Length: 105
Image (tube, rainbow, N blue to C red):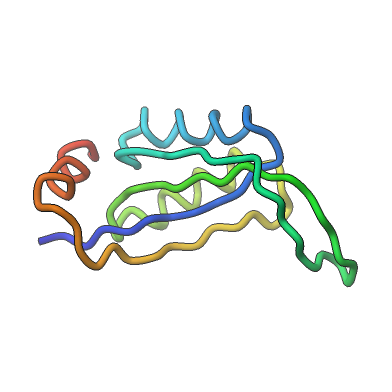
């Protein structure tokens, strides 16, 4: 069976999150992108503590698609250094994982 991952990224606006989500799903690089927010983020950027409200994208895809997903996010994202991290999906229902597989190119 193929390896699946959940990639996350955050955006400044809901519209940017939707743009990324639509692109990934329409290009069949992701089976699903959930957009959650706004979420309060507190982080260090350029030696300053920052607080902002962001939109979280949870992207369901295959591990071997990570590089293509990362490239697409970087192309569409407004941040200088966007969050792009992947977490392995260790287990899932067979039907759901098959749906992910069937939704991708």
